[in-house]
Image (cartoon, rainbow, N blue to C red; front, side, top):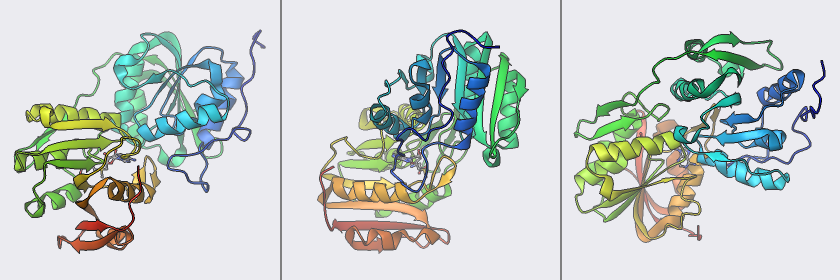
Length: 376
Ligand code: SAM
């Protein structure tokens, strides 16, 4: 059946100019699951406005153009990619949704890339299930190798109708309908041995217990310099910044994370420890465009993946950005897996690099004496 006034969507992304953040010309800014969605929407002659969720670099927003109801993402890097890719392709920038509270009250069609974190997936699905109209449909997209049993269970918990469809080019477009009423997942909480309480919203890094790398870092905190301003780059639930503030009562801290759920967690953790007046938080891609300078101390436990992809590009970007934001006598302290050889990397940016801990799996390193500083 042909529906009058249905204008077919593009069938692939080859006619668009789409870049990733961080830039990587070797990798595409979309995947086979995005392509499969376009085929499904064309088959269904879908004309309803579509809420896009977890679009990593804005490719779906560009392809769906005016049919986009809103664009919901946890990631500040994805938002940065969208804001660059839309104008580049003469596409309107969709309504940006930063938190579950801003979702429209009724939604009839959703296209959602399935995130690696099942906790984030479940939390997002719970909010979408509450708002999906009775005849609404949610297309959940992912590469077969990234879809776990956990993801399947979450879909079955929140939707009565789960149709995985046929896999094409190792991608799936699972159709979900008939939302189920159930209690959304809640934040988790724990304490460090120093008594700092951490609140972790679903999807925040190390939601159930402290990261072993962070613990190795905390074990070296007695070696840190006392400064009045500290930056926690990639702050997660705020464990490093809040531990520093607890140890040094005159200090103030800045926390930056690209995940909205991490920033919400750090905010809740700061309040739980009555430290909210001393911690300023930014949902941002590293320190770019925040205009930070003359920072006396940066702490960092960098990521080594971006959703499902392993990468060292982000850690490299963080080291470079920290070097640019530091005061001339400032110090950069980081923890990392020993095998990632951060020591060598740091010597490219700093004159004086010192290993501070002999933990068998993690290495804590301090660096000072920036070699070449550039304005951010
Ligand atoms: N500092 C916390 C800890 O020690 O438990 C979290 C460390 S976790 C290894 C890395 C954190 O960096 C994650 O919370 C992640 O969301 C964040 N992140 C990843 N890429 C980022 C970026 N480009 N800018 C800011 N934060 C980023």
